[in-house]
Length: 447
Ligand SMILES: [Mn+2]
Image 1 (cartoon, rainbow, N blue to C red):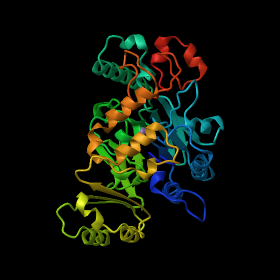
Image 2: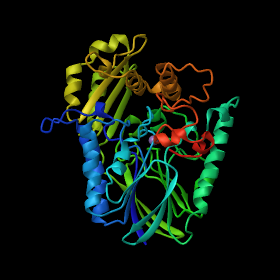
Image 3: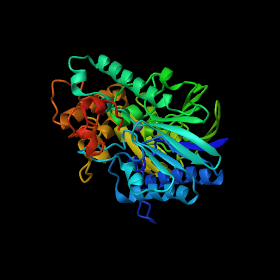
């Protein structure tokens, strides 16, 4: 029996707006929180002496993390090398870097020849020898249309037709891998994708992508003993036989994950059988306190009593309240700040009804160098009533920023990396040799 630990969506370096500077270390406390959660996952892998660690993708918020963030990630995964635990790092959409022929952020682990480490940046089957026997792991990184389709393939097709064609190509490519499997060995599919039955966490928002969804019928098959997924931040088990599992993210990236449990999976694997266990992580609570005070005769008293009632100690707190213009003077801001002091960090959003002007967001004020996409994301995060439009707005903004007004918008899918210099039909994250391949061959290569 093979014991493995499956974690995903680390997003190390995300959500720093919810942290503050730790005076002892000079680091952002949320970066430290994320690092500690990762450390706990690795602690467990070592304590349990697991045979294999699978990472389901999205290591950082983007493919070019600052050195300090890379170092925290490497320090933890390095411990698996010391413990001689084989590890597979799958490339998620946030890890891909398609400007020119660059590799994904995680490819450095292959370049350096880190012992026991495998980087999954293409559809490929890896035979891995562990202390408890051999296991096959098929890696399926985040798919983009340009991965499997060339531009002529998609000419004149509707968006739905393109998705259908892409799924057919994936089906064929995956079938090719499955046919070459050794049927006697335990087998894992490790994939970064959205399934058609997944319930969304924050990921739609994070990736600014509608993307396409992969049907469960393609994943939940007897040739796989465990399907280890990444991408959706909300932990969920989509199928029992075989187990098809999103462990979810290991920390709360933003308020949309406020009520979600965070953790990782421990899996006992045999050919034809897998037992799974979700292991929760003790992550920092997020707390939204939302109050309509417009009919309250004593809004200040109501605010203070609500703050006392809620468990805000060490939490990331968001206080939202609606008042009428004539009530503004009844609110004692200094007392509010004092009441919120036990929180780890907090933000206050008074919404004065009948006033057209929206309150400004401190994160977007002068002195904060945010790129336009970050600014828009922050704005949307603070305007929950726009959530149904958020994905579309972010996608449209991305297209605008790319200056890409190509008529064939179905090719330049919202959510695809926007700065790709690669000609259509080639795979941007591939070495130059791939670009020289016949388009027909390149089409069927996965990252
Ligand atoms: Mn993802």
